[in-house]
Amino acid sequence: MSKKIVSLAIIFLLVSLNIFVVGIPILSRAEDENPKECCKIRVTFTIKQPDGSDLQIQKGNCAAPSGEAAQQCGCQGEGNIYGLTTPGIWSVICILNSLYLVTKWLFYILTTISVFIILIGAFLIMASGGDPQKWKKGRDVIFYALIGLGVALLSKVFPSLVKYFLGV
Image (tube, rainbow, N blue to C red):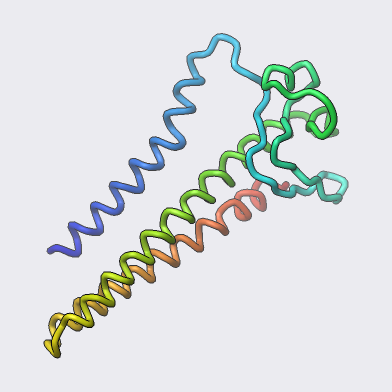
């Protein structure tokens, strides 16, 4: 019974984090009369252009459909991404930017939590005093922490899957 409660608590925490990180910014921008047609790049990544060449998206630049729209985000000068051959590619770049940023932080948070849970499991094993039930409980805690670590590693793969399905 306690494993189910812990599983449900973890699922609830992840769903709440997802709503907080993704949902609130979307809802807050939905009411804007003149939403910005640009975004500030916060993570460096690469996408493939329709001609097959790689486009390096650099942290600190802006993605926008035009130079005027890039000024809404406070970006001027070289290195900004606009005027590409594919219309609307700047919005895909902004979505990928957000996805990379969220999965990066999710990876850091889940990895840190998993390490602490592994340490707790190791402590439970050391404190078992030869009791097989306590030793099994510590082993199970470490096993579930390793599953969490696997989920953290999968979060790093998710943006690549999205890029594949979007064709960029």
